[in-house]
Length: 378
Image (cartoon, one colour):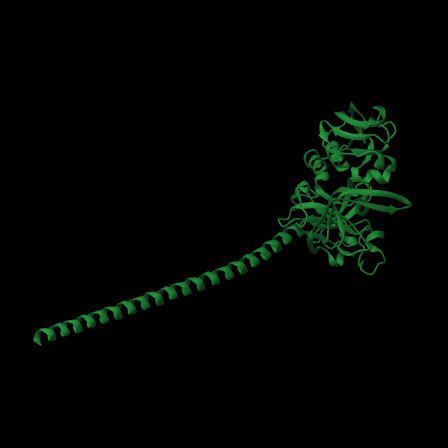
């Protein structure tokens, strides 16, 4: 019996030890589990808060950056009128048209300003410029092109803020942009509207003074453009100029157009470096491929054009005329550079000087011909 009692007591002690160890193990597991949950909860809470805060900070930072960019750009945006001391304009019928009220922007620190030709008037004319700080200047139109509806004017002062030019050849549809201008009149000067690039290389038909003409290679935007915005900058989020606001479709909302800035870069550079721009000319006016069916229906239906620009007219006694280029020819290349836009040809010629020789490859009756042409004064 004693021996059996010892065995029973041993079993009881063993069972108690096992029970104690099991309890300790269970308690330890519960502790580890609770600590793991606490760590997870702490980490999750910290991560969630961090993400929310970063998002809010990023959004606020972006808004602040855009505001800073616009404020800097505004310092180089000017008001332009062809009539001095116009006074209140908001109540004048067609004030922006009859008085030439519009917008421009400074592109050099010594007073060269870009705007629309219909705002400033023709070359050698005079208009009046109002700066952001309220100072007013007489301005001279030093260059103008009615086909592009662009001009450059000059005021006599220095140390001006000026805008940085972007690259209009590398913009993309849906890119964010901002238009700045003086809608209606100077009462609402430097109004900012925002939008996106809605389309590229647009061609629109215009009818004025019983004449029909086309503006090509335009940037389309849904940023609101009103009549007084004409000549103002279309900028990207960094404040770089992508285009010059020019045209609004009055029969629809949210359809405006700007002339790409790249076409003006060679001219601005020559004024900046030399103080003058003596335009060389080839002497042709041509349309892009997309316009050919409208200009020459026979060609448009009978021939598929893969590249080139269609010569609509040749100026008499111009370099092109003297070299034998005629209406209906299709210019394919200039100095080996393929041409698909009239703006590309213009920009290339703007970079040249009077007396420079260029090689022109053109198509006539499905036959390619290459000639050399010496550029003359426009």
